[in-house]
Length: 488
Image (cartoon, rainbow, N blue to C red; front, side, top):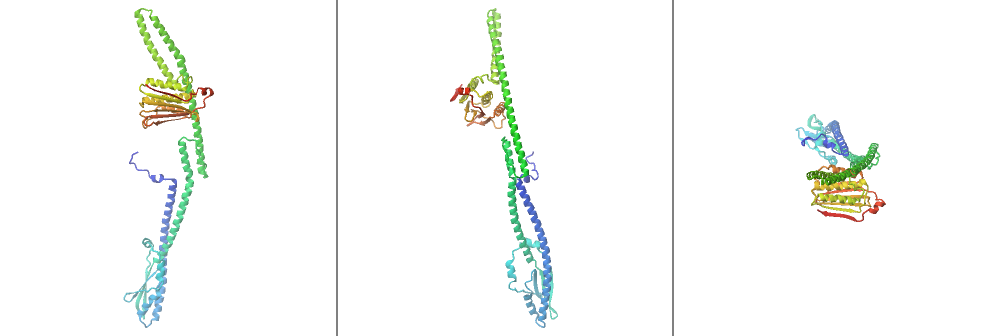
């Protein structure tokens, strides 16, 4: 895939936790509901404001007309200006109505405050945002009431709808409702957060359990949740763990059986090579020596030619015998099971010393018994053989230390092979030899690992469980420490 390929749609959403997604969905629904509620409230407020202002204008129109008529009757034959001056005292304080009194020339006559109209209203008024006022405001219309006195028009009373009081009431109601809704939603979201946490906790436990299975700990089990659907998942998980644990045990038994069969087959082949091929080679060498002695009685020229042939055959026979010994050591050292394990390993180290001049080897054995059974003995032997061979061939090591100790209290036999070579390159694949050792150690129920040594080189660590040595073998268990250090 290209590094510049666009991200799949909704990757941000799907990458979040389930709790986050559910909380975000609830918040989005609440915001949508709040937006719809605001639209409905504003629409209803506009309609209510328009109705309220029209009703207020109608009431105010009748009231002002009656007041004008009454004042005009009281002022018959009097001064019209006096009635205009008295008019503001009788028509002030009307809600939702703005009043303007004009004389005949169109000049405004001030409305004197009635003492508590504006003061009380102003004290209770809450500032209304301009955007809300603009959304709710409606055109209230105007009414014109002429002031007639003595048959002539001496002024006008102009009435206009004023929605500020109604808008303030709607704003106050909506603010209280919004505050209540906010508190309720915060409480609901908090409760939802806690409830989702408790409901989704088994999923986190399931994830941790799957990690345990991934690490090979198949004995891990999940507690059964109270939620029926999650309880079914936990049951299936536990059943899976039981099946995997059984499969691993079956594989371990199968691998152990295969290794036992392989060791038995190697032992039989080694026995055939030693018991059958060895005597045949010995017989050939004896016959060659006999032929060589008989050749001394023949004519000089014939004796010379026979000697050349027998010498060539002796060289070939030496190579075959050396090959036979190397095959025996590779398939199964014949000394295993017949001589103490420490002595067999010492012989292996001595063989490495002969074939690797200029290298230093150190062998240390602490409390090692004579034998631990064919499977353990040959596994230890092969591990040392493979580790030392890799250190010499690939690591170019100059110093190799081999430590074998029997930890009786823990019931384990521990081996450490450490060198000062080049180490294992990062990302290097394991060879078949190391994989074979790992399989053998795993089949015996042991552990094996390859780690960098300090300050350089490679460290191979192996540990296998062993049973307590029998009484006969316990007498031969080497006390103290067996150490061999040589430099060639």
